[in-house]
Length: 433
Image 1 (spheres, helix red, strand yellow):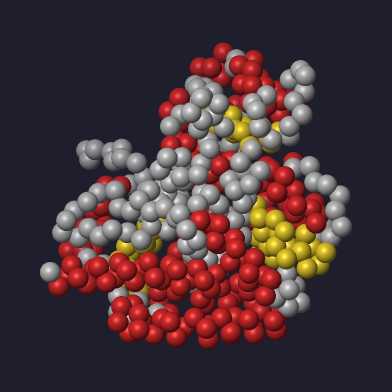
Image 2 (tube, one colour):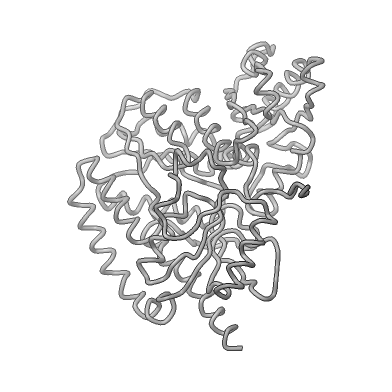
């Protein structure tokens, strides 16, 4: 009998997605009702991916607390312990909100986090948001989406006068507070301002909970792919239009995104004119790179599935092609992303690390090493085919942004392509010896 492959899959667990969302709301505190093995998952973010993260505190006042709940604790009764932990989080200096999320057994058992919170005396003054909790098959994308949905359901919103020109984005992947995301948000504001729209709130944006409340004045909600249900819920609460957008990654996708938003909100002609002006401004800068580097270059992608289609499109528009992709998402996400069979290359959903290494070796043996790997840095190094990856999205453990370095929008497209071009030049030099 063949031994089972027990190595980790190429994916991230549900709790990491919850913690990414909490990381992006800087005064939010989380009780993760899970076994002790979850204790170190905040380290996937702080100290490795996000140099600005405050999930862990040097004096022990961590924004993420683990209950160390096992099945035996649920059976014997752990509600008083959870109540004590929730009360302590609410009393932490600087706490602006408390969230609770449970591991699969807690969800199956129906642990009543809201009831526990309501029983606290005195009642904490900060808001509380119970997150649905994960199942065995759920992953980081589900955790992130469920956390934003909990906020969209329960966040107290002030009464605010709405302006048709004010918009909010819900479902942005703010995985760290570094200047790739600072610059992304600045670029999105610039693009929207060019067609007469004012971006008043982004869910989430690396700021305190109060920044999310600014969405109460939005005249429309722009739904990004990472939290569609949260965007729909918030738009319903506000009674404003919902515009479901793609991700503006790449020159073509950025033009399409702006056209989609502009058409939905009565600014289609302005969007088309601005996109045409941007392409005329930026495309001449790429002429040399297209002819000398991108044309006929081959790539492999690994990581966030939301990035895959727009990235493949951008590379194709420049004459390159993706050879294969490994996405950090289980098969249940096909309802959101499709079955991938419309793409001209194979897509592998959350393979084990052993399987991923086997596939890569087979590709490299058959066709030689790719010119560039994009996304998550490979975990295994084999000097016969290893290349440093252009890290993109979560996790980026070897690449940090201490200056403005967007990857979304028109400016982000050029910035990302500049990074890829550097690796293509390096790859060419290695081939020449």
